[in-house]
Image 1: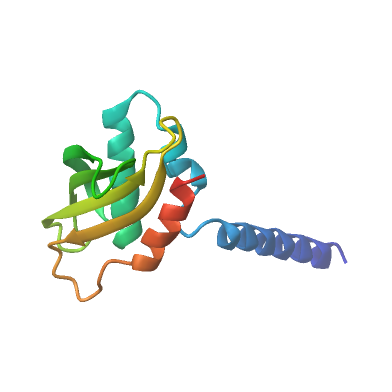
Image 2: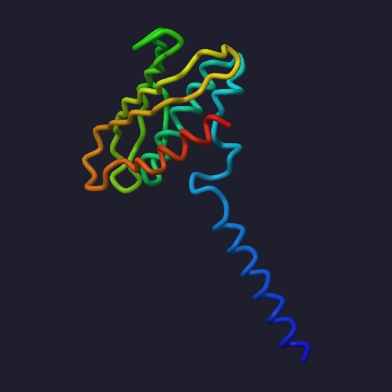
Length: 146
């Protein structure tokens, strides 16, 4: 009877661990996702986190992600709007080749302390037959506005 209880206890622990792993966000823990409402004063670190999160959402297991450049364009296409233009690099998991990604984050800057992401446009030069995962990018956009 003791062996049976031990086996049931182990199975219960495994089932609980599996449920916890599956119930978390598809993009990892929400602590890894930067919030535009809480961006703070460390701009380069913040922008690097934003770009890294977007590349991770768009591609399957990118390696060595780095920020190459970033720029804000204000009041485009209308007032209280901004575009954050990012150029990121990453390496493929299998090929180890270097790829670059061009990312445009459309931002509503009406509230100067709590920006809101309106849209994220992503493109890269990875010739993979799998296109960037737009569903993950849309989910990330929602999480960035928390």
